[in-house]
Amino acid sequence: MNDATTGLEAADIVQILSYLPHRYPFLLIDRIIEMKGDESCIGIKNVTYNEPQFMGHFPSRPMFPGVFMIEGMAQTAGAMCVASKLAQKARPKEVYFMTIDKAKFRKPVGPGDTVEYHMTKLANRRNMWWYRGEAKVNGVLVCEAEVSAMLVVE
Image 1 (tube, rainbow, N blue to C red):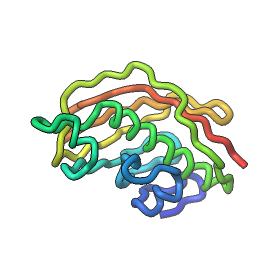
Image 2 (image 1 turned 135 degrees about the horizontal axis):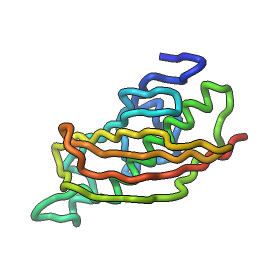
Image 3 (image 1 turned 135 degrees about the vertical axis):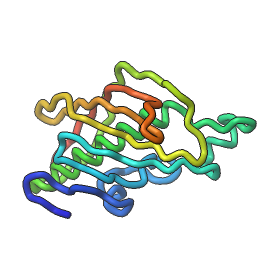
């Protein structure tokens, strides 16, 4: 759905691919199920055993790497920022991941889990955005961090 003031309310994989430069195996979100302009959103990652990281992390007990959850948060926030810029008729040329702060890993995530990235805007100045992210599986907090991104607009 499109709304000129808030951008999309959700985004499927085709829309996400148009917002972000990432591709498999480094695209770490599958869908955005809720988006409120550039204020907040929820991104989804379905973790499956056939992903390449599970060959070495760890074969006897496969765990989704924590840094991938941080990257998934950043990609979710980045897609939200791009969508909000498109709603304003501005097409970002690049999205850069700038900072990670206050990262904490609470519980392991593995194949079969669905990770929800709950992203909430902390601040926005010019072309920089700061977000607080919480990764949850079945409503349980598994990872949290603050991330920032910079958009280069044409």
